[in-house]
Image (cartoon, rainbow, N blue to C red; front, side):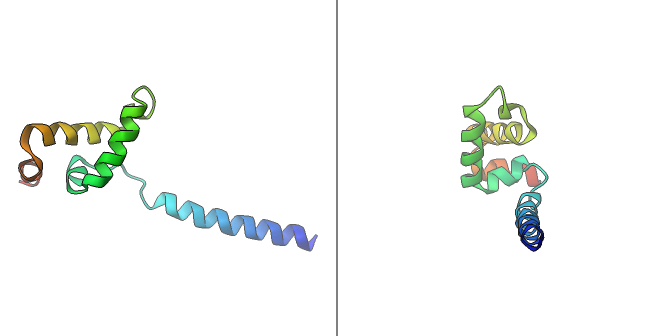
Length: 85
């Protein structure tokens, strides 16, 4: 019985640690956040492009796509200024 209680305690502790990491980012990133984080944009856009019918339809993918469009049309600095301004 003690082993079972100890095992459950460890499992719950690990689950709590894992959950806090995931909940750190509950909201999707904005277009401006993507423009200010080129590496994050490239990583997200790569995942979204790879699965356009699945995750490619979520808010984060749409925002990453909008950020890519602004980059192509305006360049990074002008795109950031246009959203801050």
